[in-house]
Length: 179
Image (cartoon, rainbow, N blue to C red):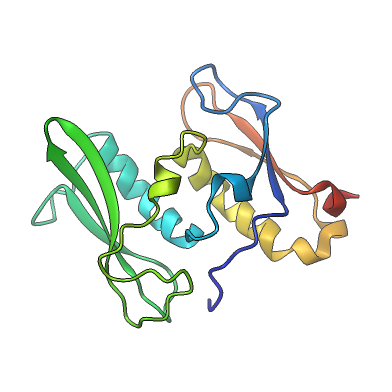
């Protein structure tokens, strides 16, 4: 896993169905590159999402010394970036932060360094539903990995697993790829 720099420019997220309270609306299409900034790591985001969602929904980690903090690691074994996900309880504000707490080497492809807050632009982006992204992540990887075989790659329909009326998405390669 030497390359964490995925090319999202050829992947489109199309909203097929969405409940009224969803950030996405049926018929909307987004280039993933417009939702996930290129300087952020999708693998790190995928690792942080479950912990972020737990904390933002007032959950905690009772096995930790500080139940408002947990440490996870990006899946890149050559870099081993440890990421602390922490809830700050100040003035009744439920601020969640993901910060690099350690790295095995200084050669992270995304240049993540100890002490750097990461993923903020994704987590705070109102156009990104973290629940949906977590479900979409494996299919995003599949499309990105197979983008060179464009003619053989078909659009993928995915249903978000959240709620009684879940959203339905179609992930596909750009028009040139689906011809």
